[in-house]
Image (tube, rainbow, N blue to C red; front, side, top):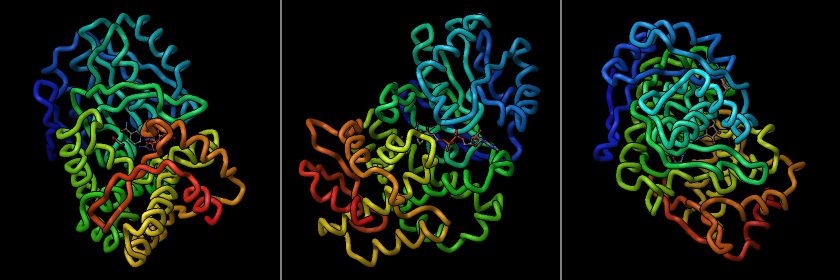
Amino acid sequence: MEEIKVELGERSYAICVGSDILGEVGERLQAFRFSRVSVISNPTVVRLWGDQLLGSLQKAYPDVAIVIVPDGEEYKELLWAYYVYGELLRHKLDRASAVIALGGGVIGDLTGFVASTYMRGISFIQVPTTLLAQVDSSVGGKTGVNHALAKNVIGTFYQPRLVWGDVSTLMTLPKRELLTGIAEVIKYGVIWDKELFQFLAENREKILNREIDVLRYIIKRSCEIKAEVVSKDEREGGLRAILNYGHTFGHAIETATGYRTYLHGEAVAVGMCLEARLSLSLGIMGEEEVERIHSLINAYGLPTKIPSDIDRDQVLSAMQLDKKTIAGELKFVLPEKIGSVEIVGVSDTTEIAVLLRSD
Ligand code: NAD
Ligand code: GLY
């Protein structure tokens, strides 16, 4: 098992990455001496991985309770957070208790949000079971829920006490979900690490065949990058915004389609292509590099264009409500070359509208 540290002073924590480690998490959590723990998950993940996790926890925490929310991005919302608060009260979780998120980014974001607000904040542990959650959402402490008008606009910065990423859980992941995780790994390649980008290009078959060693490598490398960025800029005063490459368009596409049509990573894949093209049209990146990004996304079978039936005006309106938009100025993370990006403010949306209409 490998451990990567997120350095945040007294709130520092470990990200553990390994295979077949789900059964060991109870032992690791014993040292925290929580008064009680509750697992928050959804029916799909509980059916696949619930017994293993509960079996491991029961030794240290015999009263462990499980709270189940329905499976889907549309349930990452305040009403379901309210439901979870009620369940935690029923199970008598107190300020010395902890909640454990078992699942993908939806469960992780919702659990983190509940943990940060329940009794003014209790401990939480991330046990991510999707590739996307293992490489991105379980690390860094962004928690939150969606609003019908904009994605992730209700939330907190609140770090977990531990991230426990078991690569073996990815063996049951549907292929479409594996690919959405790859989109976020491609993101790290473009914003930070050209070797990782190249690794993804050269190891496509092995990754798609879920060879444990290659999956472990891309998860570890992604977590190292995210840990470094978050340690330097936890609350997105500057640097951390680079993690949003592809997300200005991506989040707007998700909102405009009611969080149902596109998976998060698919919307980000389209967003990365659009933002690479925006970079080209603003003279920041050359055509050859834009083509390399487009080709890699395409090689993994991820979408590169917005379908014609999506209302472009709705996408533009959703972008105006993006968390990064300040005084009407949209913010984009634009690649200048593979491995390096810059953050660009755009006030006049004419160029964006043209780009969306020509896609
Ligand atoms: P998800 O949580 O909806 O999980 C995808 C699907 O896979 C679900 O149906 C889930 O039940 C299923 N699943 C989970 N683990 C499984 C397993 N091991 N085997 C079989 N099926 C499994 O989606 P996601 O892609 O993990 O996360 C997307 C969410 O993450 C979005 O809401 C996005 O906004 C958020 N996100 C947050 C951050 C952050 O920094 N907090 C970063 C990136 C994305
Ligand atoms: N996924 C963006 C961030 O964590 O900052």
